[in-house]
Structures are given as structure tokens and as C-alpha cells.
Amino acid sequence: MPELTFRLPDLGEGLTEAEIVQWLVAEGDTVAVDQSIAEVETAKSVVEVPSPYAGRVATLHAAAGTTLAVGEPLITVVPVEAGVSTAAETYREEEKAGSGNVLIGYGTSGATSTARRRRPRSRSTAPAHPSPGPRRVPTVISPLVRNLARNNGIDLRTVEGTGRGGMIVRADVERLVAAPVVAEAPVAVTGERRTPLSGFRKAVAATLSRSRAEIPEATVWVDVDATELWRLRESNPGGPGLLAYIARFVVAGLREYPVLNARFDAERQEIVEYERINLGIAVQGDRGLVVPAVIGAESMTTARLGDEIRRLTGTAREGKATPQELAAGTFTLNNYGSFGVDGSAAIINHPQVAILGFGRIMDRPWVVDGQLCVRKITQMSFVFDHRVCDGGVAAGFMRGVADAIENPASAIARL
Image (tube, rainbow, N blue to C red; front, side):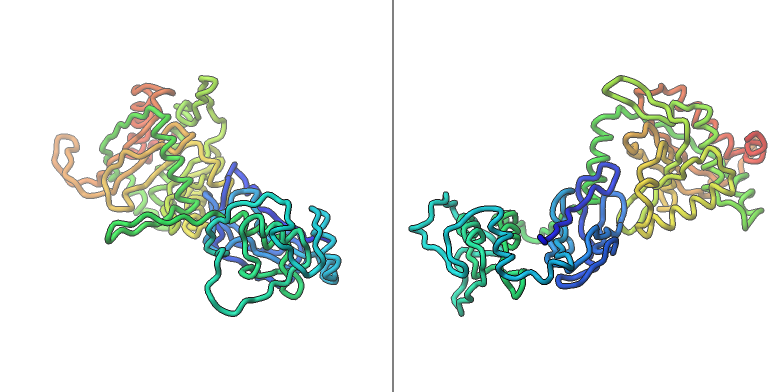
């Protein structure tokens, strides 16, 4: 029975690559169907990948820290029944993929080969000229393997065999053939340090760049007196947090201005409004900024919103938010005040059309009924896609949320 190679699957939401965080098995281990074999980091989250095969692990095709594209080999498993195969059987499996005129266990000379030779490529794992030392005689059964190695400039003495008894099989050579050619790195500037982007950062960079390239955005802001909301929160220590109340007011605003809970279809030149409000909450975690969504926020009470926000922020910081939660958002709420800043011209989370942010709440002098006093003030900024609405809609939405924050009791009574 031949070896079974499991390729990196599509982990959902159109992701094209993932980085191996750590292997949960080693070569030589026995695995069962659906056993987790690796922990991988996608642009969305860290997930465990289960094996679709049972048997002995023959090859781990990439080291931890490597980024693989969807469809690239991840792991090769020898089914339990195949563990008893002999060297001759292995040879016959190799021969099925090609032909050779070599006796088992012997190589060929360059003079008798009719295959097209390629110029040897420089490989960090398989140098064409090994350093001086004892010459290891490679264990090779199939002439196909020898021809494949010779035609690609690979010295079999440098190849570690993964077959039975250390035998070099076709997969060992093909893995080296598929390995990228190592090029000399450019001379770095003194004191320079380079950090490759992780799969997560690549996805963030692509999304933000696309947002700025495609969306003609506009930003408006307003200072909001949050004193009454602050008092409401303080009067109920075990109740919802400030962000839960703000989220409830935002949901109410989106019901009134549904064009902001939408996406823009550039190809068909249409505004696509969503029936449900999946409220994205920007969360800064160890992996970076992610935006999991409270799905179905339009049907939730303030208390329920508070519970969901706490759950989502906790799992997102641990990198355990689900792909659905990370991709479902239709509008984003960003509490950048938690970083101690007052304002931000945020970038819209494509393909959404708007993002609302709040700065820190701080004591500031404020005039109330003609009298100067100290109040709890926050700055609210709103960035929107000018293709879907004009400033009047944006201002109406902002004032609705701001008025609810300034008079929370009456706002809640109307909800």
C-alpha cells in the first residue's frame, strides 16, 4: 500500500496559506484518524489540524515556523498495513512512476544516461560538493530515484532516507527538488534587523492596503460628554460595562442608518445592505489586532452584548476566536481609548464601509447650562466609505450615538 500524503487543506474563508506553529507528532509516531498533528497559524487564528489518515508518520514536510500554501504537502503517513512492505515492494512502487535500466542497489554512470541533465542548483540542504569527510554510501533501491537525483544535481550521499531502514525513496528526493533555491542575501546595513512577516501580518497588510487603495474614506469626529453614562455604569457594579452600552447605541444607530451596515460591490456598482448586524469588536492580542464579531447583535440586550463582548475579547486575545467570528463582521467598533489615546483616523476593515472609534474618557472642563464644570469627556471618530453615503448620513448616525451616550437612561427607554 503506498504512502499517503496529506496536503495543507483550505482552512476556510479563502485563506491561501498558514504557518506551522508547532508539530504535535514526530516522524516515526503512530497516528489515528482525526488525531491532531499540527498547530498552524492562519491569517485568522491558531487552529489544530487533524490527520485524515491512520498509520506511521513517514515525513513531516516542513519545519515549525515555515509558511505553507494551501495544497502543499504537510505530512506523509504510511498506513498500518503498509508497514510490512519489503524493499522489493518499495522498488516496484517507485517503478510505477517511471522506468530505469539499473540493477537494484547499483548506480549508473553519466555515459549511459539518456536523460536531460540540468545544471546543479545551489541548495543549503543538499550541496553539490560535500565537505571532505567519510563518504556515506546511500541506500537506494530504485533507479528512478537515482535518475531523479542526478538530473536535478542532488548528491544522494547528502540525502537522509525516510524509507525502511534509512532507505532513500522518491519522496526524499522530490522534497529537495521542490525546495526553494537558496540565493545569496544582500549585504545588510550595519545595525539593520529584518523580521519576515507572519501569515497573520501578511493578511493584515493586504486588507489594510486594499482598504486604503479602494475606499474613498472620510472622517468626522465629535467630543461627547459621557458623564451620565459613566454614572450609570458606576451605579450598577455587576452590570454591563461601558462598551456594552455603547455597542447597544451603535446597533440602534445602524438600524436607523442601515446603509452603514453594508458592503460596496464595486463590480456591480451596488450597495449591499445586511439584514443582520454582526458587530465587530477590535481586540489587540499577542498576534496583533483582530476583529471578532458579535453575531446577531441586533437581537441582544445590553447585558447579553456585554457577556458576548467579554467572551470574544478573551478568546481573541488567546488567539482562539473562530474563523466565522473573525470573518462575519459587518461593522466595527474600536475602543482605542484603552491605549491611552484620544483620537484616531482608523482604516475601514474591508469589505465593511465604516468604523466607529472612541478615545479615552477623561476629566475636562465643560460648559453645562451656562456653567463651567468638570465632566467625563471622550472623543468619538467615525470613518466611512463616501461611496455609500454623504456627510449628512454620517453626521446623523454619529449624533444619534453621541446623544444616547449623553442621555443613556432616556435612550435605553426607547430601545
